Length: 422
Ligand SMILES: *Cc1c(COP(=O)(O)O)cnc(C)c1O
Ligand SMILES: [Zn+2]
Image (cartoon, helix red, strand yellow):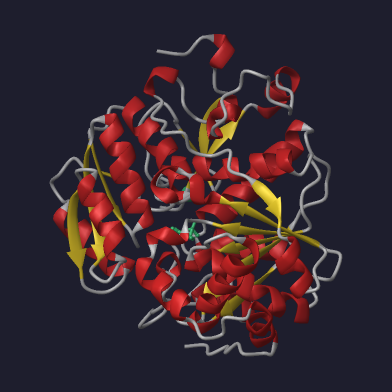
């Protein structure tokens, strides 16, 4: 069944990000059938450029579905939406002043359903899975992808299996259970959770929505880029600072810029894309610094920023490609600075960052030193979840003795960053 022409998708096929081979989007797909890498959704953008305008019409929904025709869903009746996306961008004047940055902006994803930007990807992936007949889904997760899948799966009437490290913030595990998911606690990291899941799902008809192992979470995440372009009046920021785990948001934004370029909606200027990780788990930073095209497994990964505890990203080559193509970089910050940054931003701007979002703030002095960011650079940082999802970290931020934000910024600025590489 296809939607009416008014709401049709311009998707035409899937294409492998590595070998370029084509796959059929009308059937359920996972990774590239010939090389096993990530499949990307492709659209007829030359036709779309004749039909669509970049400013959505007045009756476009105030969710990520406002660019519905550039999303992969065929029939609107399969849409599983809880109001994700269309999050605010605003300037951080007080923090910017203390860091001597005149154009510091934040896109705050904390108002998404389930409190994190994982909602975008899972709304899209669950909608497409529903459209293609899936009734049971599974995911290994550091927490937020699990609660988002649990919520959208519940809304779609699917059975959801979540495999999560046992030391994930307890609240995120309770969320998954409350949404009715079957939750498995696994010792170790998301990599161990993935291994446990793959052992237990053999012989089961569970559809795996692991990061970049199916094509559609990426399509949900790319809506970040469409929104950013619209919010910056189609003149993209010069630097985007992104807390990177599996890299879906970073790759998704870059894909959206490419699409909008082909649509004629934006010019040739692209942001420098910056990957921020934790010194306790920085496989992409190490690979970037080594000039490598792929990353190595990070042993004993450990950080309070649980969303960044990904010892090896499946799509590492795509992430590193975006960093290099954009002229960006990769930097690591330590947990102590993350907690200080939560405190600093909460007390200067009234925003309760997630530890992942706070990592982007802690990275700013490093980026100034590296010359990527200067006083007048238009910078956008992403807060990927609400701080309320991390009560344990919040307690540390509340007890932080460096209560004076000026001192905090000075502390971060004073080179209190360790670059331990393993
Ligand atoms: C998953 C997650 C990230 C990392 O996102 P990727 O797209 O996997 O790189 C960052 N922040 C939060 C809060 C997350 O849940
Ligand atoms: Zn391939």
